[in-house]
Image (cartoon, rainbow, N blue to C red):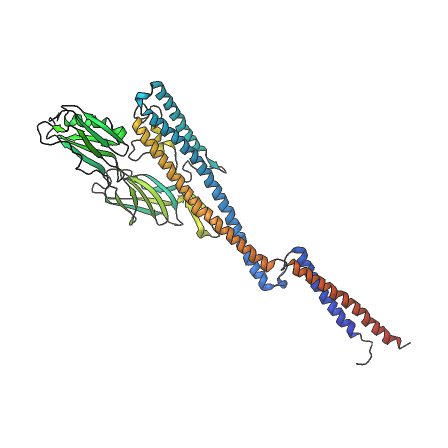
Length: 478
């Protein structure tokens, strides 16, 4: 190539220096922002992926916040119910102590009654005032709404959860076989006037316990039943007499109920060949068989627990339901009410839990003979009116609260907390993927910056040499 004054080497070097400078600017931008992609031109495909990951991560963060709030709400409710349980255990203890009337003075019974009154009032106060962020949790505000309940057939309906159905759901209850009490024919006197011959001693056992009953000489069937009924509070077994036939039966219904007797001595009846027996009759109760929307439900006596179509709940049947011509009943579960929580990143992950009111007038019930509020002074199950019923109601109230706590705990553990664990893992994965695509690798970029600086320095030095070459050509003109 001949000598010219057109300095093409300098132009090429200036272009190289410009490219190196632009690369250095991008590297400095990445190092200063910590981001590999700062604009679409940096990596168009990577920007699309990064934006999508960021959207998912935002949704996951929101779901985690929702889950943590739900977990906190349910923890508050559980803590309040724990205190209610402690009060109910105290009530049960006081009622149990008061059944031993021979060992307590009237003043002591009155003191126990005063403590029960205070405990029941405290329970109602806790239920009424337990709140989270201004929302009451246990007074029924979070109860799932229902309607159309025939209380002559179905009572104490509790709904624990509801699915995402957008329409009301009809619950159809079909009793295929009725519940039965445990029953036992103790003796047939032949007629109402025939009496026992000599003193008779029998043991009577039921769900509540066992006792020995002494039947006086010459007792008629009605008197035998009356004597046995004096111990009903201890055994849970009652007696009736019809036309000389003495029959024992459990106060409650279902397979957990039983009646058992043993003749300890005596047992003869004047004018008949019959004696007291301990070997015939139905000694165990029977649970009802119930279909709810065509599915077999779990039944304990008259208490029914069901889970159909995303709706979980329970109810009690009346004693006559299923024993007459009517064997079916319906009620409607609405789409309103309950506490609905967003547990995932889209609308399909919503879940609703129902927390029905747990005031004292709603605890107990069923075949217990009363509710917790009846244990207060002047109530039908106060210590001075019916201490045995008071004890039975207290036990049932404890079970009611335990069931509510269990349902809340199950929702908290198996839905809220497991969802939080899953979301935490998802967030970690999305964050890693986002970091790989969009975050600056400082080690790599720092090395690249050093390389660019070396290239820039060498290019500038070479540019000086190229300019010197052009100057040498011009010097020939001198």
